[in-house]
Image 1 (cartoon, helix red, strand yellow):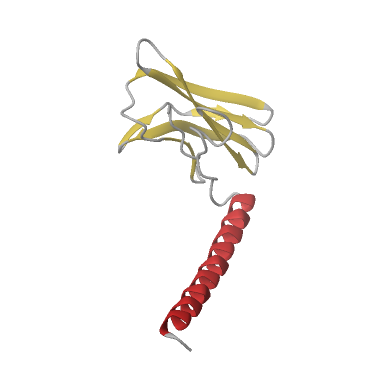
Image 2 (tube, rainbow, N blue to C red):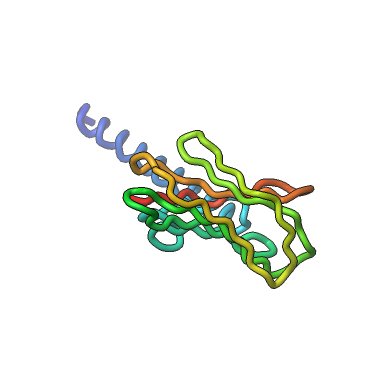
Length: 149
């Protein structure tokens, strides 16, 4: 067998191994997303719609959206549609290039929507905004990244 054929067979085997590994990674990610363990990656500025990300939680849906502010600034809004479970005490926040912005604590019961809006922030480049909701006695739930680009 020629050196070229051996090399070609070796490369072909590596490609098959890489393809199989990618399938395992993609399947694992899909399972984790489906379980709500991780949020799906942002697509075209957000995973729900342009400039909007959505993460389904066990008792509702967490939203983060970017809208045009004054001039070249942006508004960031976090919201939670609570569809089940008991009452919670929580607060929203978001992070952009290492700087966190945190809202006030609020109480929320099932069947309600709460939101917090931060107005007129200059967001640098196409760097992602990550919205989150901290729930007392539970954890902080991060939304998928969203960008204004």
